[in-house]
Figure 1: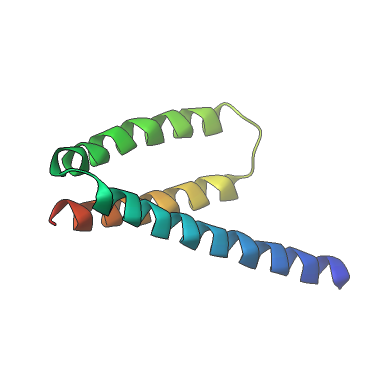
Figure 2: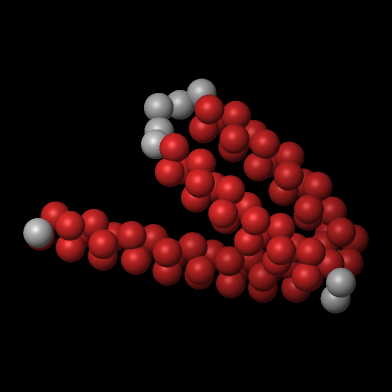
Length: 85
């Protein structure tokens, strides 16, 4: 039972860290120039594709892919909302 509790705590910590990183990203995007805000989505997509290739060529759980795609969706939404500012 202790291992399950520790795993649950770690998962919650990781989720909190992801939320903090999204908040930081939002601040950075808001502080950037309109030109940079418009360039972020394409640049992010290129980096994301690189991350996907690295994942496919490594020995990690499929859950990593799910997490990557979920976070990518959140970041795409954030970038889309910030590009309209």
